[in-house]
Length: 365
Image 1 (tube, rainbow, N blue to C red):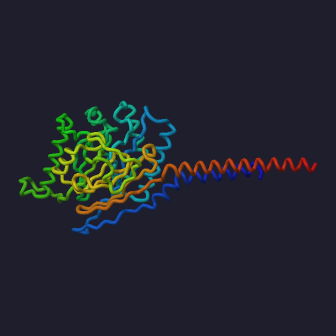
Image 2 (cartoon, rainbow, N blue to C red; image 1 turned 180 degrees about the vertical axis):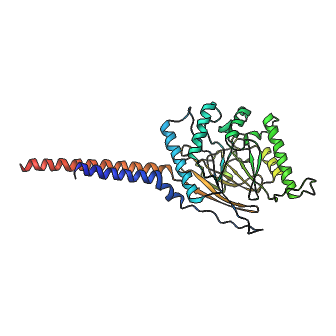
Image 3 (cartoon, helix red, strand yellow; image 1 turned 90 degrees about the vertical axis):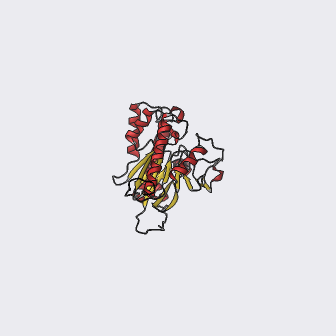
């Protein structure tokens, strides 16, 4: 084979591998997912809230990570996210904290660059809400959390405190996990006050007469808890579904909420379901409150070789959740390594063939 023709086939082969790995692979993988079925037990007229739930994107900052590492990881998240938007068209997207990897240490200039990068990578159409819960890498753990970082994050995103948000009569309570220490610090005291107000509002929805409060037009339903830290559990050994490679004991107020704060959340808001992130691994469990809790795996290849997200549908009285696996990093690497190996073999064989022909011609002469 002539070198020009050999080079042509190699370029076609490489282009095919690139198009598949960088674009088509995401459609092939994510089209295997589908919205879970849901049945409303009280009123079939409710249109369910379709939500896509992810966590721990950890966009790299100026201190950690190589530029090539940043490029690969962020491109992967971008393609997975945009493909998911195209296929599933959710009503709302929840990001359960640690949007940034260094949001708690960068200056304002770099934070603004962070925000612009996030908006490019995780662009969503105007009709789709994107709600980001604050995480420890966004504003810092409790011991270093400062109102300055909280205000900076809330200005660009959604909530850094305790907040009740209602979509189609489905109530979501967003929690700042780092403010649930119950140590009477200013931020924790404010969080406790907001939590109590939300609890009172929910009680007024349920029974305005009995609770002696003005009637609220939004009907009551038990809320869904959304936060960065999981509620209290000893380890992922309690998970009925999990993908963690090694089970380790969790530390209260660091890996999970304290047992005290978990029980307080149950008493005040009485949630029917909980979602969290932070551990970087998927877990479905019955938590301390006796309700289902889904801990969402990290969305980034940097933290998880097999990242995933959740598709969930909610009505005021029912829910259904399905875990969606994203392209595995090893598959991506294997395709490129295989393509490279085949190209090298093709070049080598063509070189051997050319040398053999040249030697044969000399022998005939």
